Length: 373
Image 1 (cartoon, rainbow, N blue to C red):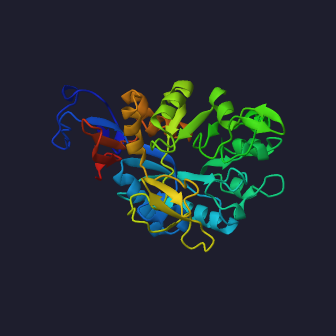
Image 2 (tube, rainbow, N blue to C red):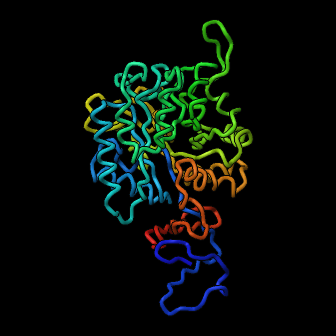
Image 3 (spheres, rainbow, N blue to C red):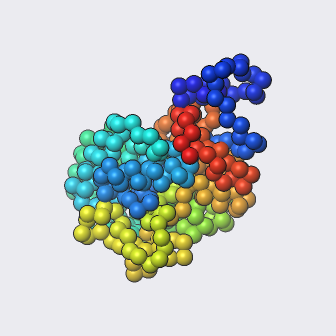
């Protein structure tokens, strides 16, 4: 039973008093889950959040809703300082105005610019910053909307950046690094609790300065109370890798993320798409090839074109129990970003829901109890 956009009660139909004012939806034996929550997405449907316009946010959030995502953390990438600030200003402005038939904008995720040169992946090294010489006060200034900041933790040599962001209510996530144990330990001790798309643009077992050490992904996997993201598109993270990560961390500590780009949901006909703002003349170009977004020269993966919903289905097909697979796309990401009233079908939670058929395909989507798809 839904009242004022909130799940007021859960019972079989006999448990509710009949009311001539109640609207009844018969799901005819289908599944109902919480709407999906995507805490790492750059855009979709032809738009990138870094475009920093109402149209871009409308398009990207509309694309997400079509794929059953009811809550989104809009994600930036390493770009000019002015462009990152413009993105945050637009996000704040957008969050202050109600929008219908769009995924809810929950906040922002800054992916960079405090990441490593070697681990920057498809991001533009031209705009990289280092906390030992560059100010991160602009992050503190925008703590009201920032949910997550991805940093290369070895750059935070004494943990002071991690500590200050954490004290300001911002989740610090490790990723895009070039570290080796014990370089990243100060950040973990200072509050780093999350891992950005584990196994992607992340250090692993190797030799550094003649010493064999574990990398960030191994340290994150074996450290308790650290959550991680996976891009479960069967390309970035294969079914075997997904089973390994979930077995090691447990479903309660893994969030599926799309890491989707503007080319998600768009034609894969060889055309080039901007990575980041379409107004940035230095923006790198990507193309879609064989179901994956690549840099135009084919040298690196550049993100995903797969929705969280499809990734959850991939996990189920990989042998992950259904309930565990759905957790990774709903309740876990909501909990990671501190959202306490979304991501679960429970009394008192927002009635953001997905109806799915026996194949877990989306039949309908509800926002605050209102059918929007």
